[in-house]
Length: 71
Image 1: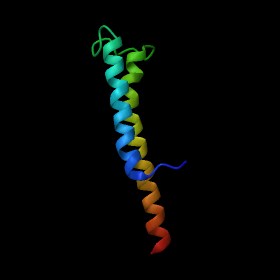
Image 2: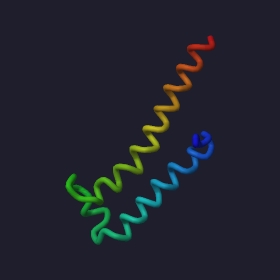
Image 3: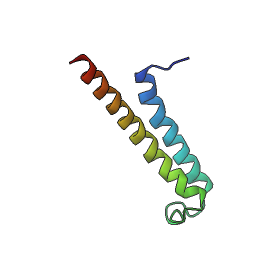
């Protein structure tokens, strides 16, 4: 089942925020201990930033192809 764009626009940041809040509740030294790339905390901060940026640039590319094709 293909999700609509407005649904994904709302769903992806909410899932990222839920992951961030979960990791904040699990890790003891949350922001200070997130400097090592081997810790789960590091990736819990990286993914909420990476996923929306990836979606933005994916949609940007898609819109560019749509506009290029129709003009």
